[in-house]
Length: 145
Ligand SMILES: [Zn+2]
Ligand SMILES: [Zn+2]
Image 1 (tube, rainbow, N blue to C red):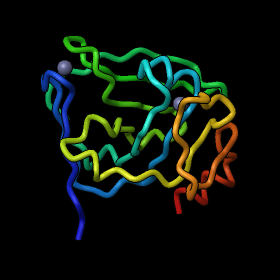
Image 2: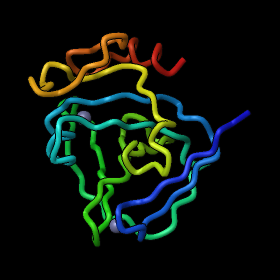
Image 3: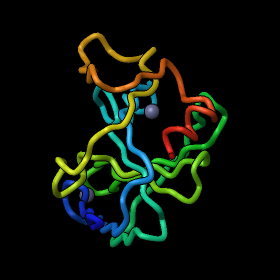
């Protein structure tokens, strides 16, 4: 049985629904994610764009990841809530910030990435594999399998 996932920004001007399981999910401790969240990390799950229906218009800005890949971050221009991550690395997938889910308990991370920039006041899950930087393409293939 496939779960469906729904969520919204804080003011609900942007809403989404997804009818497929995430391809992968992780917690990212990179500085970009810390800045984008105003917090310690980004809990994100990547779902197939073909299974994602978005209502409302997210505003996007582009940053270059340290890998050189472009990452477009989508947020609500009314409430400022970060909702989407459109990463060049995985063009068929859309990242969804777990905090925007109607039921955030649907999220569980597979791994933690960029732990080299994790803050001393963050929380790392002891059972998860950790990558000090971005996963290599080999490690990425394993995460996706
Ligand atoms: Zn909003
Ligand atoms: Zn990140």
